[in-house]
Length: 168
Image 1 (cartoon, rainbow, N blue to C red):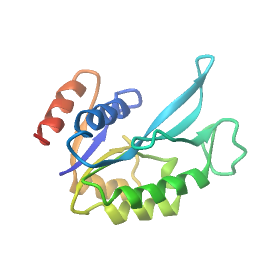
Image 2: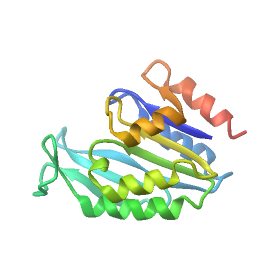
Image 3: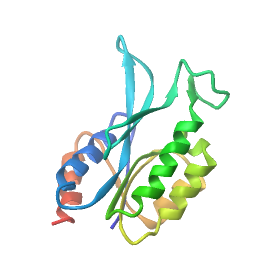
Image 4: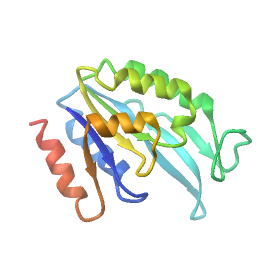
């Protein structure tokens, strides 16, 4: 099964991935990560990678980062994207691989792009979230070869049920 989930910011892509992971992790060998936003005093200050297996978190990007690699007001922390790229290689051995998100920040890392390209057509199940508007070649490959779900607040529960039913 090759699934891509996309939708506007705030549509529930990350929550959907977490729900899928939580509902199948006891029956299937799963690995992957989600991307969480970090807020301070109600203001978004950056994004964290959250490893679904270990619970570890690493900064993806922060307004406080002095990185020269920028996406909007956020400095992208390339070393941590490389760490996650190593985890992709490790988790690709599992039955189910979840990657949230393949987006502008993650795509700043050549290693990340190479690892995702390497696992695109592996034997196991892939569940990826992809940036809604990006025309990056990797995202185009995913769009062309995966079943793509465009989610919003009205259909995300239905999409959850449809995806999870494929595991039963």
